[in-house]
Amino acid sequence: MSLTLVAPHTEAEATATALAPREQEALRHIAAGCTYVQTARSMGLSKHTVDAYLRRIRAKLNINTTAEMTRLAISLGL
Image 1 (cartoon, one colour):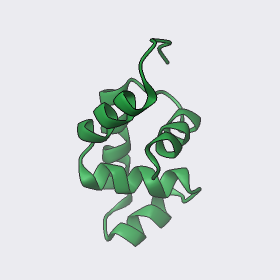
Image 2 (tube, helix red, strand yellow):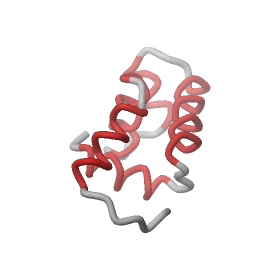
Image 3 (cartoon, helix red, strand yellow):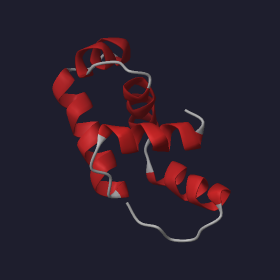
């Protein structure tokens, strides 16, 4: 996690545009405490696709933990 000084709304806007709509949806489910399987069922996907979405989110945003993803989801209002 980087500690750069950026206005919160600017960071959120940049992050929101970096994620595809389905990635945002998967992030919302995981941040709400759903498992990969629950997320997959809700989105009509396989658990492997959900895993791929979350790996892409981690790679795009340099995030390593579910806690960081949850913090991100909260800051984005997901």
